[in-house]
Amino acid sequence: MERVHSLRMMSRFLLLHSLILISLFIAAATANTSSTITDRDALLALKAHITHDPTNFLAKNWNTSTPVCNWTGVACDVHSHRVTILNISSLNLTGTIPSHLGNLASLQSLNLSCNRLSGSIPSAIFTIYTLKYVSFRENQLSGAFPSFIFNKSSLQHLDFSRNTLSGEIPANICSSLPFLDYLSLQENMFHGAIPSNLSNCTYLRILSLSYNDFSGAIPKDIGNLTKLKELYLGRNRLQGEIPREFGNLTELELMSLLENDLQGMIMNFLQFYSSLCLHLYSFVCSSIMLHVLLFFLSD
Image (cartoon, rainbow, N blue to C red; front, side, top):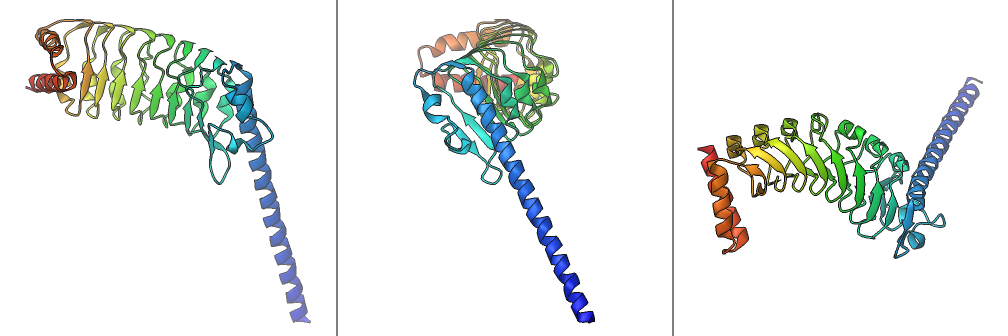
């Protein structure tokens, strides 16, 4: 009798356990489906904001008859099936960027470069916790820096170059971007001083601020960016002398400072040598000039 009772208890336990597992499986499947629909709707919102698609790329490749993860320009996580990569660059698309893209909660890489997108950059995009790579290069975007960008500690690559963005770079730009290694704002309409806080982006390898309207002195704190390999500050209204702290940039390979209002003996050297370089192989000459300059600054 006792054995029968034990078997009944065991059967009830196994049945309960099975029901719990089935419930969890159904809940997970439902959540996955819901998340996939959220991602699909975000991408369809982007498609709806495109007013001209000369190659009919989106019309041919983005439709509800196929899973989102099979759409051209989209990649997904193999387990969650959430969108992790969105790349629709160089398609000559005209339109605006919807805030719905902020619903792509697992997005890691966003590349909308080389199109004709206009309007502002939605702050909602920078609420995505996983975002590491963003490129809006060569569009017609306007307005100031997105306000939420400074909460994105995951960002590593940020390219806003060749747009019509304006305003000042916020002084705290690097306070919450500890892993940023690429920052390009060149060929925009930014003005004001270059923030000394850029020195807090200690992983920066490439910093490009050329072809803007920056003024004032070059912050000596940039000399603390010891991982920097390329530095472009040309075509602005910068004044004063080149900081001697640049002598700390031992990894630097390329640098442009010309067409500013910089003065001093070091700048005279650069101007003389760059003129001489016109008659020589430019890359070799520039490399020699840079190494001589860094040696002089570190002396």
